Image (cartoon, rainbow, N blue to C red):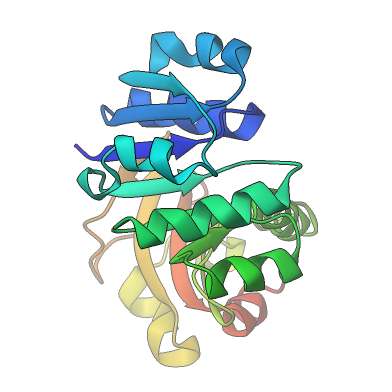
Length: 215
């Protein structure tokens, strides 16, 4: 269980709060809008109404007691930037800030953010890759070159074992897991036989995966 300081409970912030709550983490929510704070009270551990650009207010929260500080302020980049900078100055262990544009991400990283998240950009990338091909069921980008794809078993692989296919040697791709009827099997062996009712989680270079599965 982690202790999380969530600053900004707009739509994205409140969705984050709900997810953290479902995972059993402790969340302190902060926003200067009372209505927003009231809306998340049932799903957070604690909440306060206040201005996150006010150093005295932030200091009163005991910033260094939180495992993660997340800034999701939207529509007011100046406040987001000031808040990010103050969090780091006050001892934030891990400061994660939201950016809507590339230039914002650069400023945030230069002014205290350890990491930057861009929800709309990340969802757009995922949707473009997911729906541009009939062979991709899910996608997780790891960096500029590597990713994890969930793909169905190709027809020419049906009835063959993973060892016989040997895509690690041919393409440098690893089969991390096999999924069937919604259940994930992480114990992948060379003897495991693939069929049409299964999907695979494969890890490798995006170009190699695209070539292997004819995307």
